[in-house]
Length: 248
Length: 253
Image (cartoon, rainbow over all chains, first blue to last red; front, side):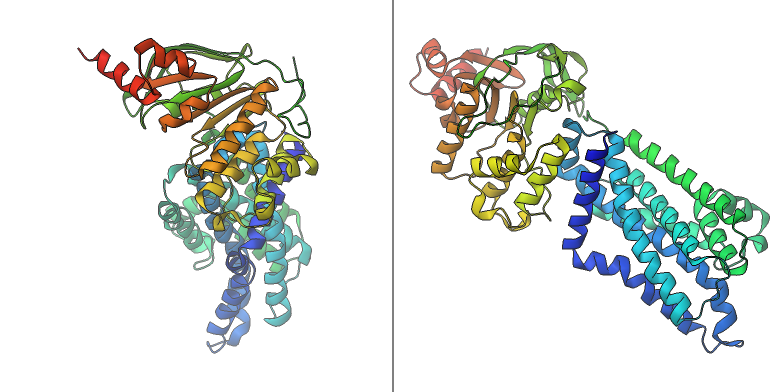
């Protein structure tokens, strides 16, 4: 691994994003709008906005960094594979880790900004109750985004076109959203689904966010973050296997 | 034998180039169930070697094997005594793929600067290679808004970074106007004069005359190998195209 090359990859990815205004808006603004939409949906329900949004809000903060980064990374790295730039990079002194971590760092930074905005909107404007430290919400969001980036990198190896890459969304992401505790609390899931939920990484990110809204004790949160990061590490390792210097 | 990548001189292709010798022995490559190369032997040395043949004859596969990005079934490719693609060769080889391998959403300068950072080179080197491919005026234009020829020159600029000892160029002159084509061939020769080994593929036979050494390829085999004059003389043909035809027809049973 060469820090110089890793940094070059990260700066280059961020430069590309800066040029692509629409993607930038999708990364930063759309999550805030969707969270606001959800808050609004529950405004007139029986017990007013408070309770339901307090239960669902943390889950949303976990879902957006993951989903959005998964989508953006899988398409960007697919483009890199098919345009020949990846082949060129790997023919140069680029290590696989330089490439993978360069992406992870770049999208991790974007995720930090995204989390700051989403948490700011949720807490300041929409009155989401958070007992734990706010900065830790940001840490969870960044870990979660790196997870999305790692899985996106991995699945991009199995798509030949951008159209195919997008199709991994319903397969990889939607089940995790359904089972992460957002819709039905994880404890109330049927046993079999609860077991599935226990091995899906997004569940841990959602748990971490929920802990933070309920208690100021952070030990459990760090444990959840560790699980999310372990999955992200595994995803990056699998991604490294799919990066081949020599191709057919 | 770690050799630092050379800094390009002001006008030439670089100074003090390492004389890189490429040795291909019994190279077998299978793509999509087809033996594209079947036991190919080849030696390459300094100078401009042109690899000419029709589309699908195995030119790209051979070039990819030289760079070390082609999965091979058998045989060896050694560059300066090292297996192609090995770590110590990676900053000594410039490679231009057939499609311009640059980022569409970055400017010319941003692309070149990125690859320069990867190689540990500075902004002087960026300016130098952008000048060599004559893209100064377009350096701040996003690549997606360039013409095909301009894009391939941007890609070539990246390959020239750090004056590599071995330059592998897959059809670098496709779609360029004749003046620019002549200039680029002039550049290839300047790089070769400074000691670099330059391998250029083309499917345009009239480019053959510009090479020091000519390899005519068809169906994964080298039909002829020599200077353009030698190749023509060997079959008594007036042009390289005629020589190619006569070689192909001479082989028919």
